[in-house]
Image (cartoon, rainbow, N blue to C red):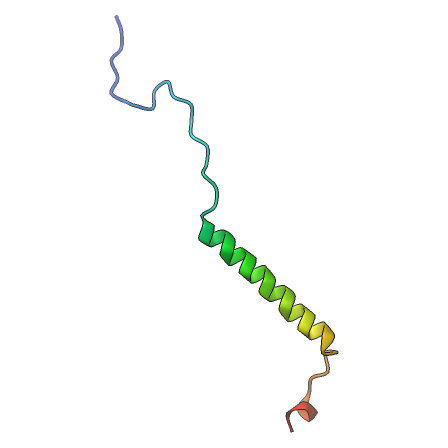
Length: 55
């Protein structure tokens, strides 16, 4: 006797995960660039911050 199943996934290989969406990748790249820029500005400015800078 043969089994008649209506499940379309029977006998098929599992699908691979499609990966991250493009907007997530772009957001991550933007965050990394922003952190690098802020770090470079802090290093290049000498880190001298205090009340004397505002007046």
